[in-house]
Amino acid sequence: MTYEEFRQEMESYRRDADADASARKDSQLVLDRLHALYLKFDASEQAMANRVLAEWALSGDEGMRFDALALIDEFKIRQAIPALNELAQRLGSSKAPGAPYELEKAKRIVADLSSTR
Image 1 (cartoon, rainbow, N blue to C red):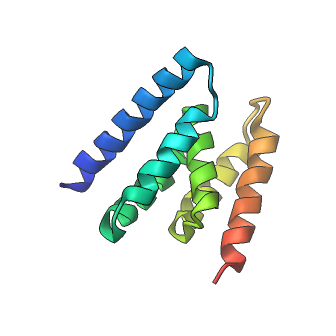
Image 2 (spheres, rainbow, N blue to C red):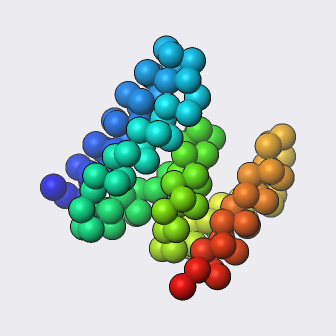
């Protein structure tokens, strides 16, 4: 499977989980399913998933960013640090109401990942 195919599969999986979560009114469902999916991946699939999550961290979709940040933090995905730094720059100049809170979260995750060896 190519990276592009893998990315599309992950995005489709997330969309389906998001639709199911909305129908069930269960906001935790998407993260639970993405967490379980990530754990099923072998090492090469996790490497591709890490790239996808770094991309999602820069998404214009706030929900997708939320999921990406949660998984990056949980699985300690250090290769996402450049994307998180870029996100922090964007959020620093954003006028969105939630930007200051998301900025603090991104900074905290970068600090945690930077101190993890």
